[in-house]
Length: 437
Image 1: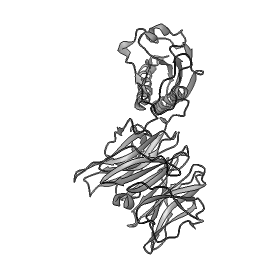
Image 2: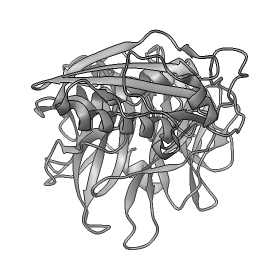
Image 3: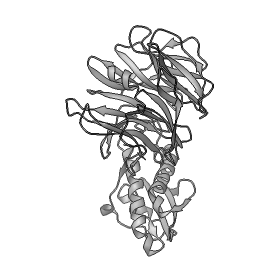
């Protein structure tokens, strides 16, 4: 796990069974494996001519979001018996039952210059009932894709009972060039790989970006001065500043606390690496660990009361939990192999990690007491998990073997199913998932 230790480093909901048709349409969270729920999402009805293409695009993104979870299967328009030509007309449920659609998503789009309004409804086809009340989102035509993600989140929530994760973003390290001589810069994109934007140039090595709880700031490590330093970047303006710079020391692996005003990180001084915390202003530095071991990759629990981290204090890389104020640390990893890059789930129930065992790398999860360990992936090199906002999906880095191997982003649900590659323009690593926007 040398690369993990030096680089200091996650999608998809649980496989869910469909409820019986006698009750309201609902996907209930279990670990069963079933056929995805079939749904139909006709193009959203345009109120004016300019809205026609947008209506088709929005329905397409909504459908793609749902299908990407592995829980839903889209019924193609070529199978439709009747269409949706009016948002206010009664739905001919018999036509949708005939093609076995269990859920129906209808919508209406109107534009006025740069303004865009979306109205939509979700129906349980077999009961003939609407799930909740219709909703409306307003924005700009330039923001149509984000509005489509919001619609998908609402549909997902009404059918599963959980919050969605589609209206979120990923900050990551974009990698160009050959292995061993790659140019790296910070980039940001929608959760599905769309709308990629560069946040820094590729003149300096950057590592391990981490979102703030509000999604408007990013912590990362940069070698701009020749030594690792922690920087704070404003996502909107791309302005940045050095957050931690101690002469003769190396700071790295920063992560926000849940209050957004606290940062926990590693500081290496005189050959020793310990965990520290400080205010987002760069003041109030407090030492949390004091051992001859390498303590790094800290992550707060959602309530801010504890920190999970990796350390080789037992002779190999393992996972530990301690109070957020420091103090006695308890080891929680006891399986064969080495463990690193722990990240606490936003639900608080699980910890994701990277594991190396018998020459293979894995992304895994365990309970916060170390029980119920499950390995979700296996590869030449999988590392650096990051949780979706709803705690059901993990995005991570996968690197292929060989001199020309390239790093890519993948996602997997917490059962280990629905493994997917996230397409990016170049190689990509170190993903960090934002909260819902």
